[in-house]
Image (cartoon, rainbow, N blue to C red; front, top):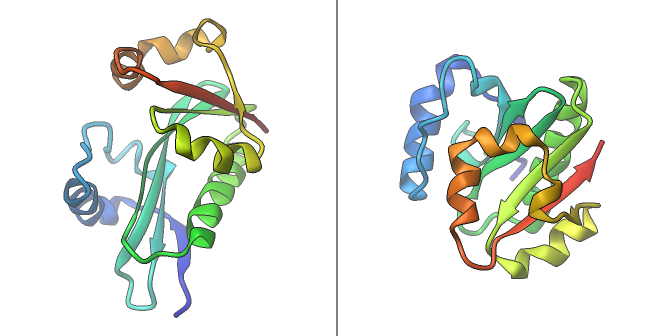
Amino acid sequence: MQALIRCAKKEDLGTLREFLTRANLGSDGLTEETVEYFLLLEDEDGSIKGTLGMENLKDCGLLRSLVVSPGQAEKDIFLLITQMMTLAKEKGMSSLFLATNKSVALPFFELLGFEKVERDLLPAELYSLEHIRHVFNVDNSLFLKFSL
């Protein structure tokens, strides 16, 4: 089965919100203005099998909402992330950040070229995001950066 990755469009908002809700993730920041910063992984029938979003902050982005359906191959996750790197570059960003409290994900992201970054070295724009303020309150949270 061939998977397709594409940028989400306004017409995808309802389906994408449902997909995120089923994964127990919020969709508060998903709007008609921000949907173009989401990638969709679809099967041949056009059903969403994965997604990755990004919050746009001037010259950097924050990766959000990485979700894949059970049974998706690791290569699909890799493709979502590398396609998001391409999208961020096309949008004129110089770096991507992500926050996680899952240290088991660290080797995977380091393999992709992400590097750990200390909280006090994060760009000021990130501090304005509710998601980042929440992550600061989670034990063992890690921040990673990828330079484009």
